[in-house]
Length: 109
Image (cartoon, rainbow, N blue to C red; front, side):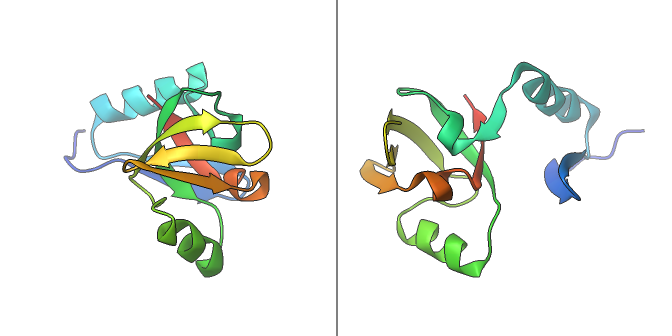
């Protein structure tokens, strides 16, 4: 059964579940899980690029990150991971604390 649409990732209790509308995209995203392609922003190394897929936090955290240009769907590149996490988002350099970075789920590119 193949239903067309956009894959979505939802948090189900303490695990992440995938609800996908096409089998091809489902296999692609599942392979990212197996190879470690989906992780928290704080786990990325210097120079790696990623796409933000989820922000695990309330309205306040989402607003703070959004004001800095980090939202679901944005592409980032890690500049430094020593101390605060410094990333490049839309040609801007942004530093956020490690606590905030641990709440941003990304897919490595």
